Length: 324
Image 1 (cartoon, helix red, strand yellow):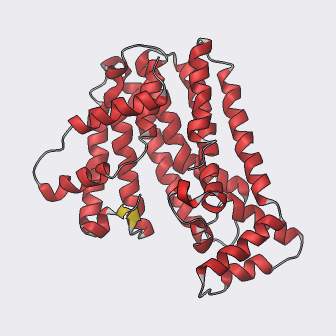
Image 2 (cartoon, rainbow, N blue to C red; image 1 turned 180 degrees about the vertical axis):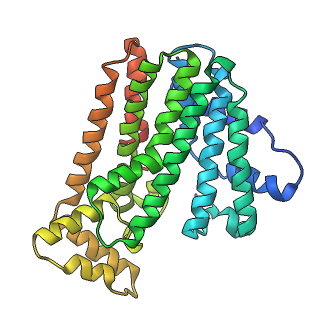
């Protein structure tokens, strides 16, 4: 039984050996560039892990791993366009390095290639695998639309936020593990428990990202903390702080968010002072722990060995209780 790190290496080797067509270079070279700038390859590793829970033939699930990785990168390229983002992992985004039309087309072909790879899997499992990926693809689009909608709203609830990150981030992690497990021979019922396990873990993963943006160590996180604050991004931290401010008839936070700040550091400090006032760090950690506990409850329903359950439990430290 492999751990996640070993599966990440296995997939990285496979990815390096798979090549896009040479022509037209304007379509495929941007994808080679984008996939080459890195990433943790968590989703493809999750697909391989799901398979490895039920079979030793992990290599047989590599096309699933490739499908979810290509699909994920398709969403990133298009998200960068919608967000008008200049950088991704410290490198130029595709639309910045090339142009907008190239980014749209290159993203489109990644999506189609993802389905091509999925089609290489065992024929008996294809209906289930395609149904899961189709459902997931729709949900990811829904999550992105909610994210766009919420950026225009003054107030959203924590429940709305959780549902948005469930769709935008968590469902693909969950689908990756489930598809790998089904291809490895798991029953659909068992794969559903794995799906719920990864779904709640994915929510905790995103909340941890929100937490680290404010309270993380910049050297380990790899970026200056407070970026979400500068963008007035409606993370769980900001939503909770706004709720508590309203309950206390305190308009200070809203004023800070609406003001123009010549010094970005000043805005970050003022918002962080309010976060400290309302103990937002403690609240956020409690939410992370809540979804971790929900994920662990799904493990009780799995017909797996103690060793395999321990490997699943160890994902918490890799995905959630991390400092970068």
